[in-house]
Image (tube, rainbow, N blue to C red; front, side, top):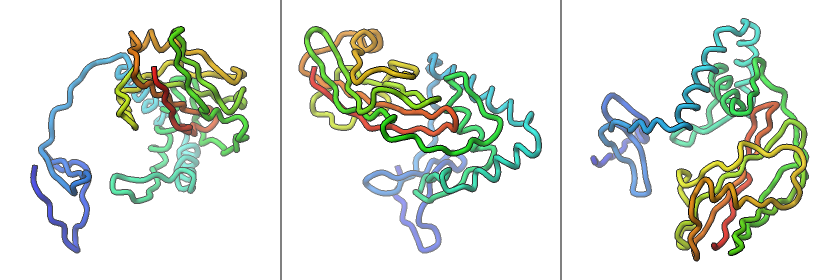
Length: 232
């Protein structure tokens, strides 16, 4: 791995140029040779490719006025995002169309026109307030809300049992348990059967992490409402 010394002309580089990949970590900037990524051909990966192909195929079929509406929507502040070096940028209209449609694709929802913004009442956003694990066996979640706003859902992701020393697990350790909870679900939810099915044996004296992803199906907006953990 090479050492990079920046100048007043070039002070940051991110991404791929030819066979070289530029990035940064806690030790500073670096450059490495591009590697060949594995192709595990998982069900999730296959579904994601299918989704991308289907969403991409719809863009050319939009009318000129619809494409222009997406271009205008992409300039709105609510769709700003950060690039690899932390700068705020706007997607293109086509990029925004892809992004929002990919977020709602798993739920058989699509949008040919840019969505209107709406405010979800705080009482209908399911913030995770607790995770309880017992030897029953049982894994129970508690929430700040007991029902969801119309056309919204929340997906639950958990890790298996991992070391107590881990404070912030890698995203790759999380697996989705529910495609989405809708409507009323009460202030608590037992998820032991789903945890066992996805992760297998639950080991004692380990941590289980849980996170919630809240999605508004009318506009593709997603909120990760944080994660919590408990000892098994």
